[in-house]
Image (cartoon, rainbow, N blue to C red; front, side, top):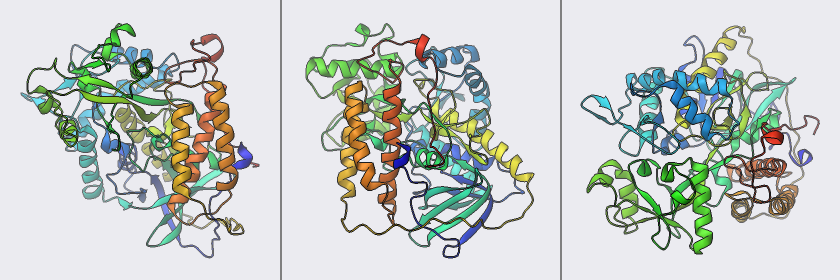
Length: 537
C-alpha cells in the first residue's frame, strides 16, 4: 500500500515559490485550532490556516453540547466510568481521567470568553445523552452549541489575540526535513502556493466524514490532516474506528442533517416502519444506549423491515417542548413538511466522527518531531473504540490548550534563525487522459458506505481494497493544481488506510462491527492498531 502513496502531491522548487515564516503554524480553524492558537505565547508569531471560511468546521455543526461535571450530584468518577464503558475496553484510562478532570474549568473559561450556554435562573441547563449516567451536557441555542462556542472563540481570537488568520487556504502537505516537520506547503486561489516555514506546527484539521455517502459532516471534512500526516511519516492509530451517528435526517435527495441524540435524552423514542419501539430489545438502556449500540440496532431493524430508515417519535415530550428545545432541527424538518411536534422524523445512521488519527501523547505531541495535533484529526486514547456523546468538543478544548502550550514552549527555546530549507519535488509528465474527479469521489463514497459502514465483513473489505488500489494507481501519481484533485487524493489515501485497519481487526468492538467476527476478543485484540508510511517509499 505504501508504494502507492507519493510523499508530496505537487511539484515545487524553493526559488519559484514565495516563503512565509512564523513561530507557530496552526492548521485548522475549528475548536481545537482556535484553542491551540489562544495558548500560544504572545511573544511568538502565530498563523492559523483554514481551508474554508473560519466558521466552516465540524465544531460549528456540533449540536448536542459539551460534556463536563457541573452538577453537584455528579462527579468526575462517573464521567470517567461512562467514557470507559462506551469505549469498548480500548480507552487510555490516564487520558480519560485527565480530560474529564480538566473539563469543568475549560467550560467555565468558555463562559468567561463570552459563550452563552442555555440557562435557567442563572444556572446552566444540563442535558443528557446516550451513555451518560447523569445530566452533564451544557448546550447553547437549544441545538446549536458548536455554533455559539465557535462564535465566541473566533471573536476572541480576532479582537483580543489579534491572531493572523488565512482563510480559504488549502494545506497541500507538511514539509519535512531530516525527520522533522518544518511547516507546510499551502495554496489559495489568490496567491497560489506558499511555503510556510514554522518552528512548530499544530495539526487541527478535523475529520473525514466525506469518505462516506451518508454523513453529518460538512463538505470540507475530507481527511486532509490524516493524509498529510501519513505522507509525512507520522504514526496513525485506530484508523478502523469511524463513529456512525444513529440519527441522521433521511430525506431522499437532500443533504443529510444531524438529529442530535439530546432529543432522545429529552424522551423521544425510536420506532421502526411498523411503529414498533425496538431499542429495549437490543439494550436495557433503550434509546440512551451508546451510539455504536443504537446505530447497529437501527441498521439491523432497517434490514428486518426492508425499509430505508427508522423514525424518531417525539410525542412523549410535553406539548411545545420539542420546538422550544430544538429550534434548529424544527426549522430544518419544516423545510420538508415535517412538524416535529406531530410527525415522526425519518432517520438512519451516518458517518459522524473519526475516532482514529494521528497518535499523540498527553500534550498533543505526535511521533513526528515538531508536529503537534489536537481534536478529531488525532487518536489520543480518550474515545477508545466508540466516542461517548459530547466528549468531542471537550477533547478539542483540552488538547488544543495542551498542544498550544507545549508547542509554544518549544518554539520559545529556539533562536530566530529563519531560513528556507532547500526542499524540492520534481514535476511528473502531464497525463493526456482527463479524469472525472467527481465521479471517482462519488464512487468511493458509495463503496466505503457499503464496505466499511456500520456493518463490515472481510470479503467485502478485501474487494473494496482492490477497487481502491486500482483508483490509487492512476489518481495518486497525478499532480493536480487545485483542491478538487488534492481532496480526492487525500480521501483515497485515508480510505485505503481505514480499509486495511478494518481488515486487520478480526473482531467486533465499539463502532467496528465485523459480521464474520461478531464477538469482542480481548485476548487477541485489546490493543490499538498503528499505521505508518515507510519513509523510503
